[in-house]
Length: 515
Image (cartoon, rainbow, N blue to C red; front, top):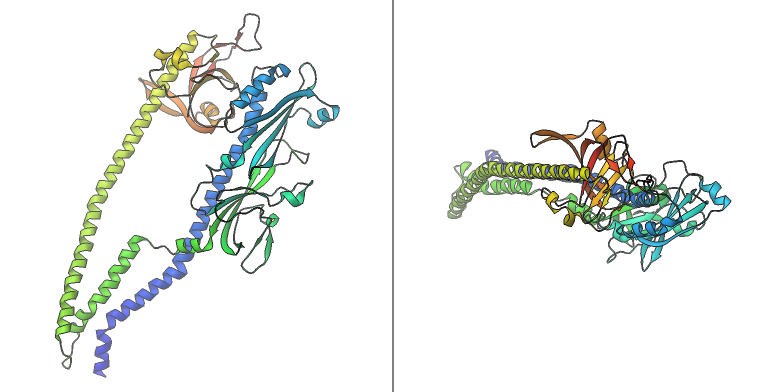
């Protein structure tokens, strides 16, 4: 009975180690893996929602661009402006002008449109990829009642590809879910964009098949975000879906063609990849596990000697294992202690380096903002001395002495207190339409006292910095605005005989547009 107790005591540590190892594996498979799968699912849903908002903003921004081109501030809308509209559409990147025409409006068209412009968008298959076709209609009530019709297109793949570049998904699809009453069987579930065409090619996704073979209609899923495990072409996928609603109208729309365009953004992730990512273990956990496993293994010779009884013999092989255990354990402990010491000492060094880098970024950012503000001050003084210069192009060659502070901008423009652009200067050989920007945060934040403050040349300066999609070109821009309390004289096409129109309200904002 004593021998059995001795044997149990001798192997108690390895047995306990095996039990602990089994418990850790159980926790890993039954707790960590499901938690990691949920984390990946939540992360992918957030990414898909962000991509959906970006796609929505990009597409809807084209509608805003067309509206601003047609209804440019201080420009009379009539047939004589057709060439100007064509020219300004051609300046918009990624938007191809198909047709711009003005014709007499029928009584039915007048009654249908009322006082509102109409914008309809639909997809056209062209050379194995889809084009997004915009049809813009606007009534002209100046002179004769005419209807301005604009047709323009953009390549949907080129528009979405930069947004849908995330590697968290094996593939990304954009599916049409708006049911066209004219041809519902053709429109619903049509895949209008697919990122990865080298592998699985999806033409239509009107329904999904789960692992049990049951089919789920896409219409039942497309109204909200979802995560489903489905089979596509014999392969198991986890499909993440997020609805994208494209609308160009703020008012209630009654006609069928003016209803919002409904798309479904789908992220495809192979189930095998999801399982593999869920089972990944942090390197820190692997090191700890290896240390515990080696410690348990190397402790066997030591425990054997410690719990030897009178009847046990100590053989030469036992001594060799004992010496090897001491040597390896000592080396292992030394490495662990040394690694801990290096981590502690170098961790502080890394933190200091990161703090220095953050300080340099902050300092450089502040210096750049200060330079841009000085540049706006200089240009505003130049504009004050040239009140008739409402539109200026190629200003790098015209005002070289005035651009020494920050010559890296693309455009500077002045906005009055109502949010209407009054003057534009650009480094390019063309300018963009004059529009209202009162709904832009970089404008109304000054009135709401939500601007930032920065001391520049011993004076406190309010400024707002905002990234935007341009309402005139559709491009990504960074906007810096600062207020100026000056009364400016501007020139417009609705001018008096002297060519000038005096605005009694102060123009309060000057804007620098930087790419």
